[in-house]
Image 1 (spheres, helix red, strand yellow):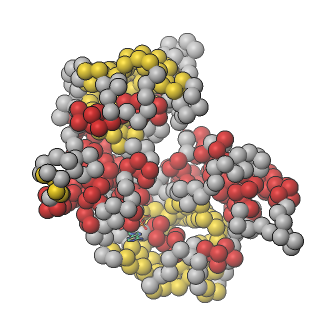
Image 2: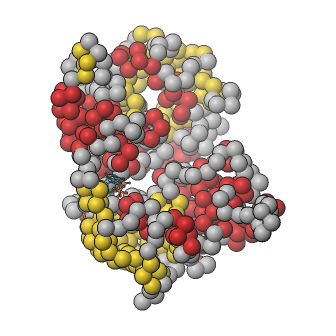
Image 3: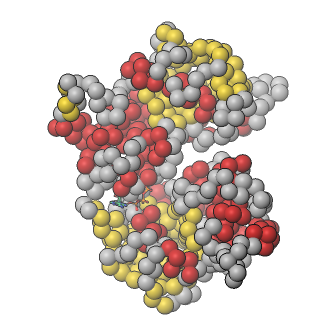
Length: 507
Ligand SMILES: Nc1ncnc2c1ncn2[C@@H]1O[C@H](COP(=O)(O)OP(=O)(O)OP(=O)(O)O)[C@@H](O)[C@H]1O
């Protein structure tokens, strides 16, 4: 068999955890190979080893049949291996071309040949159907385009093997479709791809084979065509997974959050949210559906106090909080699962336990007269971590940075739900989570509702909005297009509303 990459019996240990335990993955030339596994199963570690960022403790790597030692990412590049990380590594005020040649291109005379590079990038972009403008500035292009720049960067360096780490996590549904097309184009031209993803639908749509790992061990490699989504999910978590959300009807009570004619400016100082009014009641989950960038961030930031409202009012349990500080809003009962877990969710260089008390460290029993009560903090953190199944090497003492992305996300969700807020704002709460964890988080959101609390769910996953919410508010271009009962609508209707067509067909 013609394998372009073979990772054989790989082992990698971190303090307190065996991240990879005898893992074998063989990549055929010209295939799309999915790598599937629960949060913390060891996928990123395995790919970091292939890309030369970590050295395995045991095992070997073969490229085109020859054993190699990949000492660092430059060596990986020289072997034709490229990687697109979850968090892009682009300089935002540089152009596409400047980013691609950064650290790579010096001519024989020590001067840069930017025009030549731009021409080559344009050709590559055309050849693989990427449609990227080499002269555009990174800050002016969409996230989907930025990802293509990362792909181009690999192609520019003649990568034959492309590793994509959860590439669809940051994309809109349309961008995901385009990405799948691009991946299929790439393999048609002879490239080989390893893609880490939690989305079984995408594996079905794009991949040839799929290797499943669980808790650091290989479970098996399957042909995607002949394996059902349910079977792959079961291999991954070791039990059956239900894909539907079980919930009783809602029982809404008094209004908890009232937004009245709210206008909020965006970063470009134009109205990102326009004269927006909405009620969220106790005992209900209201979902916000919309294409990314249609006012959702401005809405969330205005409610949480991260951005000021230009006009209009925000009421929490009848009290006007429009001008309250962030701290005062937290104290009054607003909790927030932020979209960006690394920037806003966690202090990555703090331990997990310190992250669990970020909002409550000044309360008893966690501190008294400025002295922290470590044992109370540890107990509180340990309880959250075990109830949300946050897996890490050293439990509450683990550095937050060392957790896998999905486990970081679960820790944030646990911390916010534990505050028992009267209003829980959940932004993309299940982004990057495996299907088992998604099931669990949905259950906890519904439980919170059933305790008589209000939940505002903002998600780009239409399935999630439809399944978890009781009512759905659709936004387009910063405006509320309409509010519908989740039980009485469907994907088509919401899709049309997201495109700006009001309920009943009026534009
Ligand atoms: N640098 C590190 N130091 C300590 N522990 C680490 C480090 N990197 C990863 N780990 C641990 O190794 C395990 C595997 O992590 P890894 O990031 O490979 O998982 P993953 O499968 O990619 O998860 P996810 O789907 O959540 O991204 C986790 O328990 C994680 O906490």
